Length: 378
Ligand SMILES: [Ca+2]
Image 1 (tube, protein in one colour):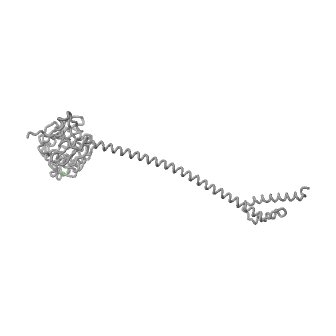
Image 2 (cartoon, rainbow, N blue to C red; image 1 turned 45 degrees about the horizontal axis):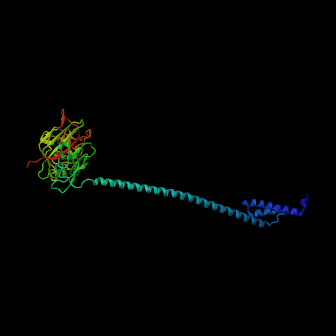
Image 3 (cartoon, helix red, strand yellow; image 1 turned 60 degrees about the vertical axis):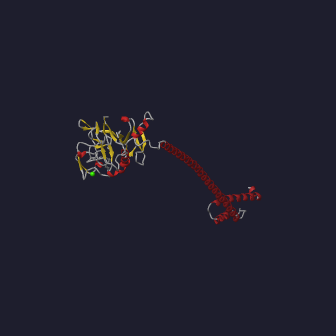
């Protein structure tokens, strides 16, 4: 009680109360209560004890509030800055990774380009190894020229330059078969080359010389029309059950393109029958002009009756192949070697209808047409 009466003590406790009031008011200051209410609160509570004028307290509190808010704002700003920096760092890191990746891709692309140009270069070198000079006028001429120099002449692709022409071209020469010197003008073995071709293709030739091909009517014309030469034609056939046979003509030549490369054949010899001439004049293809699916010289005008079919175009009837058709006839060596069924009335297969076994035509799986010079007595 005595302590309470001590004015000093009393004033200290008043100050303490004032401090207490201040801290209470600080708590209040964080509330959104209007300043006016705070004043009335201070007035009520500190009517006898408030030593600091209330408006100063309010000002102090307001300043403190502003400083806390300022600090908060600063912290928020700093947080925002550090977040942005973090994001920037992450993005920079990703960009660096991307840069490394893209440079690796570029490096790989360069390597691929180098490799492909390397391959191209070696291919070019391989092709440029082929001789550019012609080896002779045709395969018989090459054989005659090389015979005294080389003990054994290999079969393969040679360059020929027939007499009285301004063109050189590649041909396949068979140097082993029946004495050699054969220029291959057609080969059908595996069905990998498409023989459904236009007139222009049959004139120029197509396929691969080492495999299936048609040398081309123009090139064959140049070879067989050289001065003081005669050519024989040899047709070698193999059946699906590996029986072999042949048909040979002791003279073979073609007319020029203005006569649609009409075929002219000499005497026949062989084991496969003379399918070029057939059994009667109507089937005879000797002297017939060449036909293709887009050039019709087949003698079916307006149409022929083949079996149960009415045929306007033998080429289309025979799977769009080119041949010296005459009312179609019994020969078409440009058919397919595949053992395929007849398709929609079309005849797909290689045809040499005079080659028969017990009256049934052989199914032919491969054929080669080759020509060779005949020694002339002039
Ligand atoms: Ca016709």
